[in-house]
Amino acid sequence: MTIKIVAPGLLEESILDFDSTVETVYGELQGAEVGVNSHKRGRKSYHPLLDYEAQSR
Image (cartoon, one colour):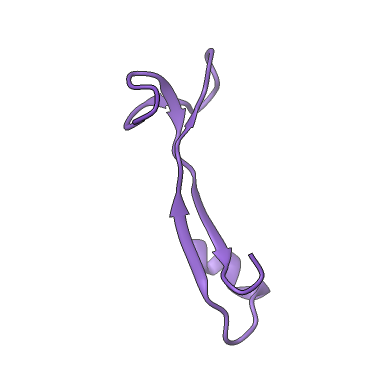
């Protein structure tokens, strides 16, 4: 899915790096859920997936 969104803006020979992270949230923010969070266990967090064009970052 992500590649369909990103591909039109890339050069022909681009390298994509995919990564994920955990962002702990405080309070009742929309979309936050309790999940795997090694820093603050049991807290609600977001788990966004990130992608970078490797040559320019």
